[in-house]
Length: 246
Image 1 (cartoon, one colour):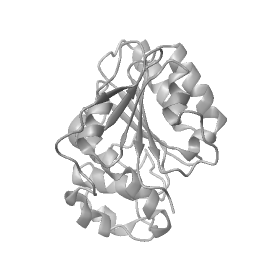
Image 2: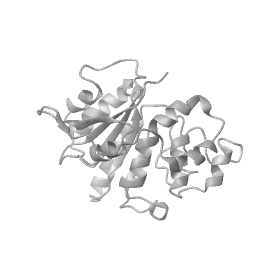
Image 3: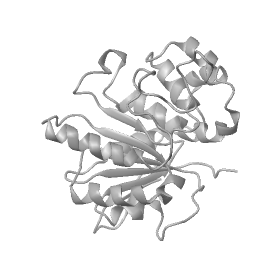
Image 4: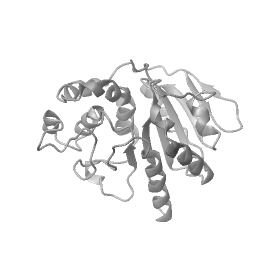
């Protein structure tokens, strides 16, 4: 079941999709097995796997040939620690050669423990400390708006724990106040946040004027439907719920 929430409205429920995905895409298994040396972040990586695949396989208007096209969609990985799933998806979609996966964080490798936009084709931001991705996404959306580029969407993938950062609270409020309707945030909810929010994660966004949906983070059809259920004049957030972090 997908729950969709918008300010001033009661949640509406969509019918459960007929086809559900409850595990990693089979295409990525062999690629993920080539990435070794960061096993401590395996759970973090796998929590993002299905959302990343839906974005790159079904939604993002970007390809290896258009990584510098001003009219491309932008994807910003704020949840940058444990990027194995991201690298595997980039390899599957031919942004990077598959053999790069065999040398994660090696002395000559382009693939670090955090993605580097200067080294990895298709990566929009370099990550490090958590809590900055949403603000960078807002800046990107504002820049596109100022240039009159109305087609690109900006997607930012966050973890639930980094919402504890005050910078994200300010970003949520600003995006809602300025009606950044080309901005979509995706929050991976594996219940790792120190603090909770009354009414759940989505309510923290909707109070600032965002539209929101909460979905099974392994259900590809539900993820796609939620990501495309945007509203004019409002930023949008999708909370993708996965198994709790152990």
